[in-house]
Image (cartoon, rainbow, N blue to C red):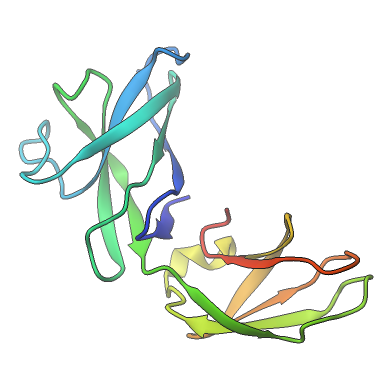
Length: 173
């Protein structure tokens, strides 16, 4: 996804070409933050993190913990030559303050599902492009969510029986 929480851990796939053939020995470096200083080198103070070349067209990066206090757009840069030079992606990664769910209603429904569940909380991101990525997870079964207010998301429960764990995602994972 192109969005994720400031506390890191989001799996991001950078697409392009000429990355190599992949495999266990194919590593890359991923950097999130300021644009490259001269189109090749990282900005002062910018760090890179280990990535993995999946194939000639894709590199997998795991986002780090970001040292910013609010939602921000970050350049994504990659290196496939051990940091000798970097290339900046034309796409941005948007990092947001992690959301906190404080309550939800109702707390139960029929096993057949189709119950509208409203989740309440704080720090729900207003990332417009994340709209189709909002999901509720009932155990591991996902259901599309809709941001109905700055502190509310509504999801419809799937058919499940017994107690389930409810989780909320703003980046689809």
